[in-house]
Amino acid sequence: MRLFCNYLGRRVLAGEIVDGIFRKYVKSWQKLYVLDAYGLDKSYIDELEKHGCHTIELHEIDTGDVYTIDLQKFYDLAIPKALGKFGIRYYLPLRYWNKLPGTSLARGDATYAV
Image 1: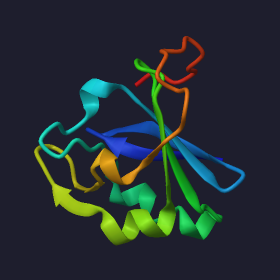
Image 2 (image 1 turned 180 degrees about the vertical axis):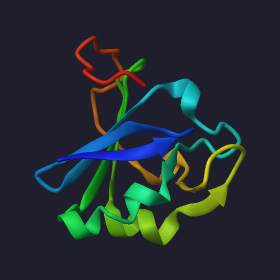
Image 3 (image 1 turned 45 degrees about the vertical axis):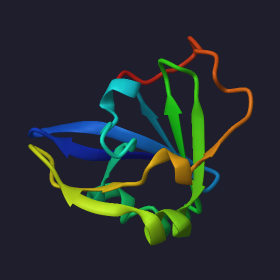
Image 4 (image 1 turned 120 degrees about the horizontal axis):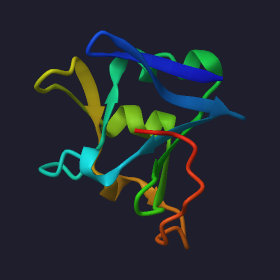
């Protein structure tokens, strides 16, 4: 199931839920470096549990790194902030995520444009 969000008045793909896992594809330049975290919009994150999601996966398409976290742990630790042109987003430093082993080589198979 694909989830969409509003970005500057446009409807854009936020990610997809497959077998209870929300997969979001990002590029490393989108990271908020001061927190070493990606911003995940409240508008779709708050919908995940309703759709049976239990895990979040972040795929850095330019590095090949994949990070996972349990949805409840994400909610417990994430920092809600409204920065710049974005509404409220949840930020969770990558040190709290599980980096999947062997995912550091960049892959060319990403199907999402970010």
